Amino acid sequence: MLDLISQFSAGYADQYTAGMTTRLRAYWYGEQVNDKESQAWQYGQQSAQITQYFTDFALIIVDDASTDDSLDHLMEWSRRDERIYVLQLEENRGPSASRNEAIRRAAGEFVVYLDCDDEFYPDYLSLVARLSPRGDVLFFGYDFLGEGGDAPQMRTWNPSPRKSLLFQKIFSTPLGVAHRRSLWEIVGGFNELLWCQEDRDFWRRIARTGAATDIFNLPLRPGHY
Image 1 (cartoon, rainbow, N blue to C red):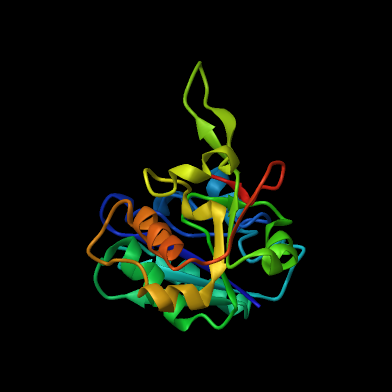
Image 2: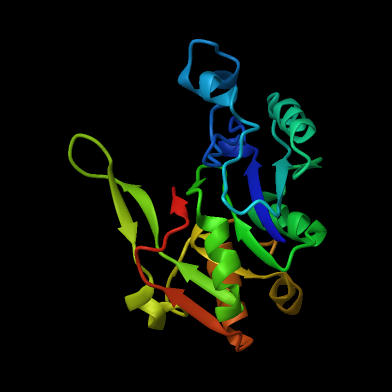
């Protein structure tokens, strides 16, 4: 089984509501979810429809002390789909603590990450399941909306030529990484003192364990952010 970790937080992002469309998309402003004229509300009606070709997974969503009615929506989605688990933090503790709380409760062998503004493509979990024998840590390229021109353009990040940069800069966002849950225990989880670049710190500590790593060339991609 695979575990998907999704988290959204208070502070600058306290208006985010984690939701899933048919491609596991997870972002909307809370006030838009309740506006029946908005596109977000219309998509929200499909929130319980999670289309992944691979279905043996648990989606663990952490509400990091949101201040709107996000939790109500999350609880409704969990009632519709038994694969969805919702954790609520009483105070805003940041991305590291949110991920740690979720992974602590995860039961699957592999962990993947779905932040509140990311989207998985329907075949991603199938890819992870099929390629998991190749390594303890799997890095994938991913699509992202880049700035430029009159409108944002979809671009692709390819980590393959940049493997040597793992210890020098941010190598990948969580969207592009799948790893064995046991590695989280070995390195002691995410550093909860870090509220930014916590993922870079986590990848580097995993790399120092000597974990078997495989970086997959395009066109294999998990999704976009």
